[in-house]
Image (cartoon, rainbow, N blue to C red):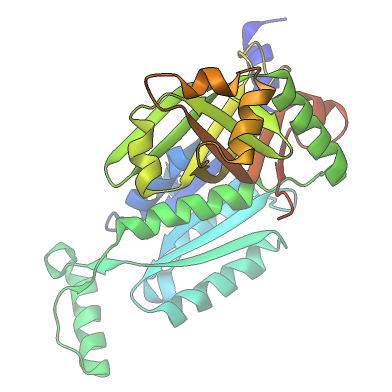
Length: 329
């Protein structure tokens, strides 16, 4: 079997996203290129360079701007000429413009053509600079401003944060599993994995400060406990109790994926309380010895709020390889 065939067989198992944008003055391209790495594995194309075959893509994002009667003209032509079938894809429609009601109307029109129930829709406010417009567009905008009674000049302001939020929302939407095992199976596999491991990477931070620290951990009664002498991670923990933590196997192949991402909250356990002593006891650390140390020993408790588990075994059982588990509070 050739390396290319093996590669494409592996690609076929991945949740790959295709982003197609129709952009006259550049904002659509900027948004597409902003969300592309967030949605990875993904690739973005100007609609005029779009691939005619979308079989390797599970998710499709169509990005277009409002241009009166000519909105998403090239996207519609692409769909018709290539007889694009979205029925087995997850689809997102993103409209850029200055007027949200008009944008939502255009999205509604495109939804009917795409004819897919799994559609994510979003309107992003764009911007318009008079000096970038061609003569025809400039006259149209001048007429529009006169009609609605607003000064003729630059309009709108593109907000990159909105594009990043869009990327996050799209990522969550596309990563929602379609084939889900019973909750007890997901929980059982996650707990077995955590119990059989003992090393994690803990990410903490606030403001411009971020820190990722390799640490030994213990999983016990639904929580994660870490014993630590100290370190820069406590800068983040002191100002922001939100954390991210990951535990994973070495990568061998697409058929042997195993990695767990945990979101949650951390707190420092009060020294010498019952919970603090219990943690030390489970690690066979004698309280009297710890109390005689010439420094403080800290215990971090992490309460998970979300597990994201990429596990090839799920795929072998007929489910999506990536599952999400939200523990009961």
